[in-house]
Image (cartoon, rainbow, N blue to C red; front, side):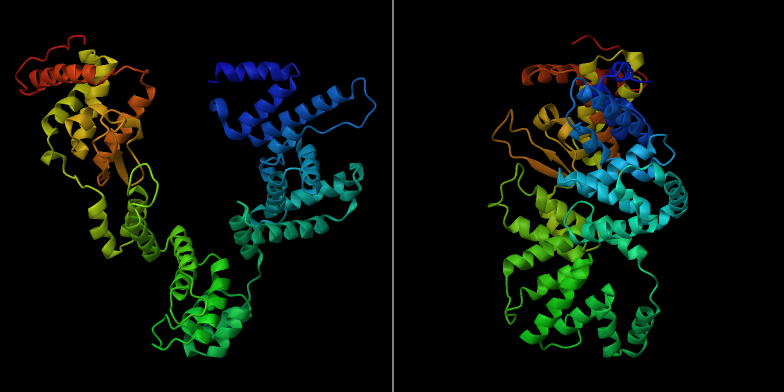
Length: 486
């Protein structure tokens, strides 16, 4: 069901309000106001907004009509390939080409170039491209812009040029553009043959040729051999390391994580004339970002060693994240180091609040029957979470439950009330722990402000709730009592 705010905007848009039409288009693009994402509808409202703005600008003026920049900013975000069936597709098609030819916001230009390239040359859109070519041929005489008088295949060539520009840049579309360029490359029998020759015969010439022709795995293999990081020899000359760095850098630009890690190793070699500890760390960090397990462990261990010098809200949180990532990929040393940073409490039966937590779960399962108030519900969730992670009483009462969970651990920080108590990091290890956090997070997110009160009020309520839970659920034979109001 549409929200009131959405219906209000829709009503204004239908009456011709340009701003409302743009907001409506944005809602169909982003899903705001719980609106289903419908690029075709977004395009329709963008065209209406554009025409309305043109009409407004032209009233009483013979000067050139200005194009609303915000409309094209929204337009650039539109997935053009998903709007071909829209009655406003011609407007969208022309607008995207105007954006890429403009000198306005560079981010809009990059986005428009990616959308055009994706539509015109992506193999996944091959069927759509055939329909588009037929449509373009039919519509070309009606286009006023001389830019569109060129052949459809010429536009595809131009789109490939845009794709190369994006792949060589550092925008958010670089990785997607590189991947699409790889898909567009024809199957190269020569490359396959050279690589097979190397694997079967260890022919160095075949490996070099494959690397020179751009095969990423050949660049990586050649770089590792020249650096003698593949176990082939123990002798490492500066000349060999320079050549190795050259090939590894080419492989790294292709996004190979092993190449980044090997570069990090080379920059740390004393005999390498380009020795650079800072560049080495950068390469290791890049490899870690791409998922290299040893690089992730190295990055985490480095952050842990430097924790006193790093400014972070909770000391050790960054380090623990990377070490945890390495542990997930089987790095043995990571488990030992992680145990020094994160506390571990995977067995709730061994924790202090186990009995109360069982009673609290029973109360929550029948909270309508017991008519639990909101503040009592919140406290029951606090008890369950506290038992899963072995909180102290102060942590139970004061933790910001909605902010506890990070990907790999919970951060217990109550310094806002008790400054002398240091934050704790506790590893999330079980499904039960995640479920407890998820359930509590939902309840706390919908709770009213200041429902729980200050520490004194929370302590008083804690005594009330725990007494009631014990009396009601400690013995199944004992009749359950309804809670008294706090």
